[in-house]
Length: 155
Image 1 (cartoon, rainbow, N blue to C red):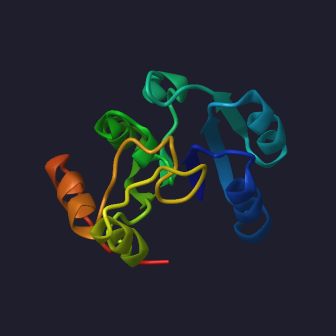
Image 2 (image 1 turned 180 degrees about the horizontal axis):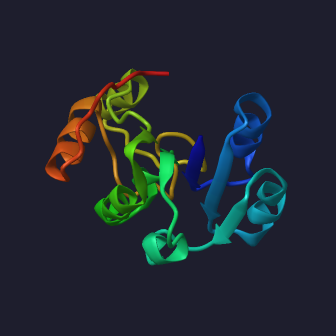
C-alpha cells in the first residue's frame, strides 16, 4: 500500500508500516528536526506548514491508498482545506484515516462541570489545539465536507 502521513513527526508510523506491512509512505511535518528522524523510513518527507501548503502540487502525480491525519486536524484553523486536498490525492478506493482527541472525554467534562478549562502542555487541552471534536461533531464536520464515515472507534 501507499500512504501519505500528514503530521508524520519523527516517523514512527512510517517505520512500523514499512517493517510490518511493506508499505511505502510519504510524509509531511513542520519540523526539519522531526523530518531528519523520519526520512530513513519514508520515501519522501516534506517540511511544510499544513495551514498553507499545497499538498496536491507538493505530491503531483501521486495517488495514495491511505492518507493518515493522526492528531492533526485539531491543530488547524481550517482543517477542511486539508480534507479537500486529501480527496484529490486518494486513489479511487483510497481511505482517509483520522484520529482526533475526544472533547467529550469524561475527565474534561468533569473539569468543565467544576468550572475549569485549563490549557496544558500536552493532552486533550494542549495549548496548540485550535479545534475540538466529539464523535458526533467529527461525523457532522466530515459529512459537511462530503466525506462518508465508515467507522468511528475509540482508543
